[in-house]
Image (cartoon, rainbow, N blue to C red; front, side, top):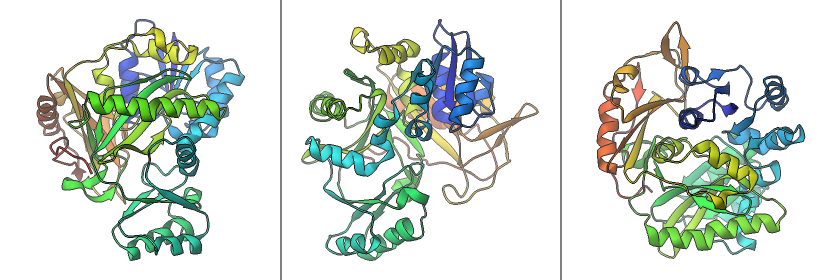
Length: 423
């Protein structure tokens, strides 16, 4: 089979690396891909949001199956466009991808169907939003309604900070049109857990749990980023929590979307907070998380392509999906200054040395390949992932690999997976 993967980051690299284990696949294309992906797939210079160009390419190359990694094309309707041309594609249609495309929609859905989440109000008027903030006791959570590269959430410790954040989002348009509507939430406390799930429209199958580190610096300090590292399994998410989440969140979400005429096929990412009152949804994503994918997929023992096909065909209940019982850890090596400002074009050394350990895989996120050498080409440059018989072993191995890799102004957190809780 010929496969097309849409996207250009570490998540797409992890998807491609796992797909290559399938005996059914003879060729993988990636649009647009990156330097590291080019070693495992043929990269084609088509933007992830160039839907017309992607459809044309898939038809010209007789692509058998397309996997959409990124959120933007899903929310724009890339799946609908492919299906309209009779092309097989993995991911939710536009009317289902709205669970990530609009936080206001997803919060209304949860309220309507009694899915546990934080109390909230939605505003598209700055003055009314400001008045509401003044009635709250900090901390306050502000969320841009639309997509913002994982950075459209502000946790404000004071009224002054919240008002300033509202101005940045709604008046200054720091996140573009994504911030014209803002969701203002109560601040929840507890450990965060990411549960990615396969879904075929009626059956939902959770993957192994993971925990992400969003803040730029150690001890969860600094600005929110797209993710500085992750580990699997979560240290705080056991069978009891998984059962409760399945019964109160996963199944009700799929049923709610069906009742709304928005049948979901693809990946539903449940971003959860384990509060004293029980698990609550912080956010939904309509695709694999990044960098959670980089620790979840290495633990998958089953054929990923078969799972994707079952989701599209509505036969997920027929599969027995198997997972490795050990652990995995991913340390993101970023450009100095990320997520605010950073320089590109620095040579990266030591990747080959790090990957001599068979339990280590370096997933490329922001790299370029030139004359056989890799160079930095983004904020998050690479995700150094290791697996092990235990989580602690995986963490230790990942940091040993990180020590072998170098580039100018490299930055990484030194406490990935160390803390029991990830607030």
